[in-house]
Amino acid sequence: MLNPKEIYNTLPPYIFAILANFQGSMLAGGALRSMIDQTPVCDYDFYFNSPDVADKVRSFLTDAGAIKIFQCPENKLTTFKLNGMKIQLITIKYFKHPLDVIALFDINAARHIFTVEKDKTMGILHSGENSVSDAENKIITLHSITWPLATFKRIERYKNKGYSISEEEWKKYLKWIKNSPDSDDEILFYVD
Image (cartoon, rainbow, N blue to C red; front, top):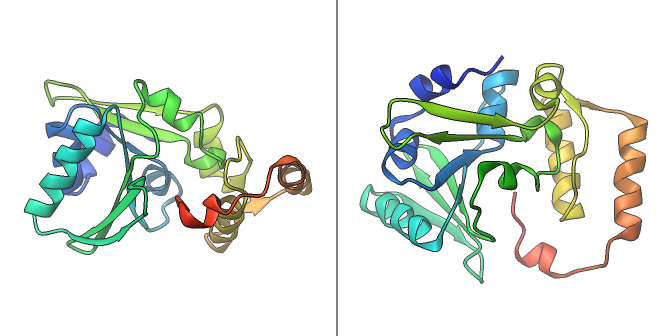
């Protein structure tokens, strides 16, 4: 079981510094899932409550010597590399509450978000319904799909980590694809 105190105490220093020093920054997704399923962390995904907080974090990373390795054309995703860590600043939208972020996630096992309180003494973890058990049991269930190609690629990566997906979930995925409009934006603004 994921425990906020354990997360708080095991985050890499720069990741913790972002959460502790920039209120409105939120760590979400696969890095937290990795703490449950014991798979290696691929990246640290940050979401924000305002463009101002995102800009301050971008400046903090640049000042710390992080190297920008990707920026989408409309500035909706910026990826940095720092001390071997991939850090993604996702600014496709700004969120007032952490639960609003994970409501958009496609794979239930990754629906976790962590914030640090203003006094920096405690972290708060929010998880989607059954998200912890899906990660513990390495089961892929789909919550929501915005970018079908990104979801497909993510499913494949999860399968490579030992996750399984049922026929029922594949059918759900295919139904979403059938009902979604085609969009070139998915390739251009691919958020992973």
